[in-house]
Image (cartoon, rainbow, N blue to C red; front, side, top):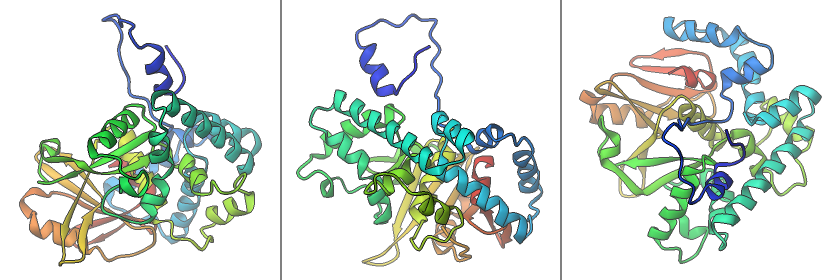
Length: 323
């Protein structure tokens, strides 16, 4: 058993022949259920699982509490060291310092594999790239004149290290999504949304408790759509899903986008993510109209209560890990 980031582990075992008895296991930051366990809560997730299966709403008051509990997970994240610091201190500023230490170790490890620090630059730019809401990661806005092939090598290394989750564009959305994957079009997400939040406020020495409290109470006047998209990617990856997305034109200037596509049996489950209580889902509607024979379930992930809108099941974000 080895500990550390996969970047340093891969470097340390380079050239070593691994015996056939080795069994690789994919490890992720603690998911939301494991986070609830760490806080001594064994009841919430089984209750949510039953409600999702029965399509029963929770009620506005309960949903508000569940969203506040979930926002705590988004702020602390699932890195065990950060979770432990929160349990010991309940001080989110101290948790933030712990996360900054983890991120600095990541940067050092990136430098070991890439002395040009291009990988580190690509990693640090992920929050900004998602905030700009582009249909793919814009490499040349981060590292000028970086060739596509060279960028893909770096992205593969980053994905292999489990420091990021990568969603690739599916050119032909159908079961067997990898068969139509466009490796040159992708979105990158930070492996842990707690780390993501710290990176988004990296310009401060630490993220003050006042900022964390405003985020926790959903009172910070910023668009958090990119944070919710990152946590949905994290939850889907932790549940064993490979990440794919799909875009198609609305007109000459605009595009519809399905944030995530899941393959289930012989059908697809498209997912659209909203950061607020929006009930519109134009991208989902157009996608399901265009590929009606390929779709079974369709989901809008948002911050409000469980609700069925004709064929679309609208689920609160804390239920994503149960899909």
